[in-house]
Structures are given as C-alpha cells and as structure tokens.
Image (cartoon, rainbow, N blue to C red; front, side, top):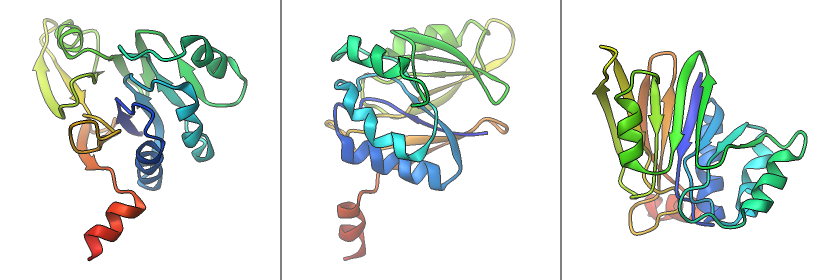
Length: 179
C-alpha cells in the first residue's frame, strides 16, 4: 500500500492540493496529515481525490470544533484523531503525532512499524532501533505548506517500508522549472 505523508500545511491549499494530486497519481491510497492544518476548510482541496485522510491537529490547532464536524460527516474520508493517533494501514502499525521528540520516543517502544511527525518543518527519514529488538521507521515529511523551508511531502510504500521525499510541484513551479 502506498501512502502520502505530509504535515504543516498552514492553510496553503495550493501546495496541499498539488502534493495530494501528485501522490494520488503515483498510487497513494491514503493521506496522513501530521498536524497544523489550521483552518479545517483547507482539507476541502483533497476531497476530489477520494483518498482517506488521517489527520491530527498539531500546535496550530485552528477550529477543532469544525475539524471534528468535518470528520463526523459521512463519506468525506476525513478521520480526525486529536493530538495523536495509532492506526493500522496496509498491515502496518502507524503512529502519528505532531512533535518530533514525542515521535522519537514512540519509535523506540517497539509498538509501531512507522512513526510520523511534523512541527519543525525539517524533512527527516530514519530507522530507529527499538526496545523490542526491531527497527521502526521515523518520518518527518517537512512542511507541505512551504513555511520557511521547501514545500515537501513523503511517499511511502508500506509493503517494502520504503520512503521518498518529494518536492511539491505546483503549476507555477513546473513552469519555472521548464524555463
């Protein structure tokens, strides 16, 4: 199963849509948003792709009431968990939290195959030895919103546990690259 991992969209609808569009075209079957959506209406741009969106809130919480209302609407594909989430996708145990220090601690427990975070807008993919004698992949996709860092997301293949950092390419950045 392929997934799109992103974080820190900070209301940048254009970049969020571009990332999910590219991930969907590359075969993503779900989106993990590791916090700082801010305005819940920002998630409207991913609805046309028909992918389930698993989201937590982060430190820029925005309107949590509305985020809960959006998630409780049948058929929209948004699954809102609060400050963190433990989910099962593609046979893998995945933990999502906004803060990297919390993510690193959870990765060491051995309870999770993949731990995803955000917050510091710094892309990081690493494998961590855990106390169960196994290894857990820790992914911070950076900022899909391009806040004080390049706009990025991560494509993940849960079968092979392979993860790739991808730049967000909007129509404007594609035109710039072509010149």
